[in-house]
Length: 102
Image 1 (cartoon, rainbow, N blue to C red):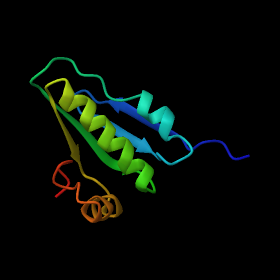
Image 2 (image 1 turned 120 degrees about the horizontal axis):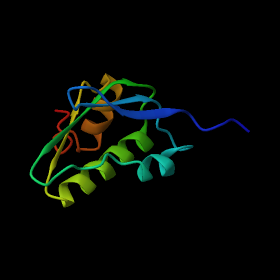
Image 3 (image 1 turned 90 degrees about the vertical axis):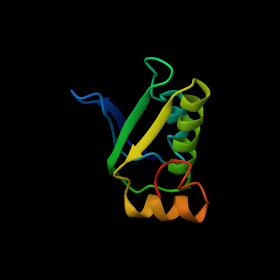
């Protein structure tokens, strides 16, 4: 049995979170439990997706769930530098504008 792919959500010194590795069907449930934490309502949280590998529909589902959790707490989640494949999938699913990927 292959181990689940690795992913990490880490903060840089400027407060931007960086998502690296891969979120897939094998580790999506773990990724859901590791949603970004909000410091206070009314703020904007940025996540840089440039190092995200092999995004698929499971990746998109996790990103939608993370955004919904942040929005429910009165803040905004902005995804930055998404890979082209993820942007195309989000457009196909008509969630690109909701996620700020348009």
